Image (cartoon, rainbow, N blue to C red; front, side):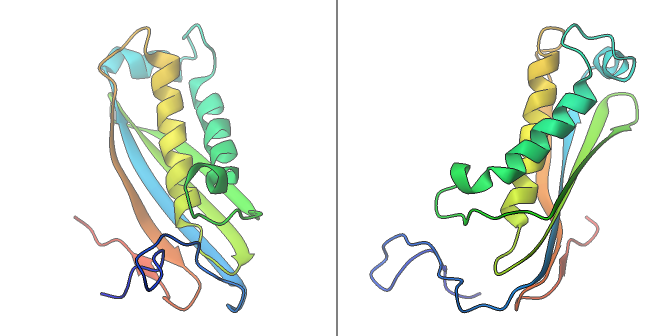
Length: 159
């Protein structure tokens, strides 16, 4: 395991200098699961919640969050993203799978942008549904894959 890159020789926090890196296509995909009551998912899919289209609003919130990751995570580089896709799909009768894929041609990766996108999309689902289901649970926020840069490709294995 290598050194932590966000600390200098004295142990102080620092933003990593990426100015000497070559630009390359960077991709990251992250996912999460939102667990809820069966009736809550039915309301979401039937668009019968008072706050409106939960899936559409959560998708937009995830995209907006990915674009602002550099403002939310200390020491994270602000990046002009080339693409952000957020997908929300039902899993059975009581879960939503949320997935975000982020791409950029740049000098640093976009893992944090993908993870931020899924997290905020999940929080938006909770916010829009909390009046009917306070037991909503957000689980398994994780990086699924990343590529680009000198560290190469990472793909999560099946658990």
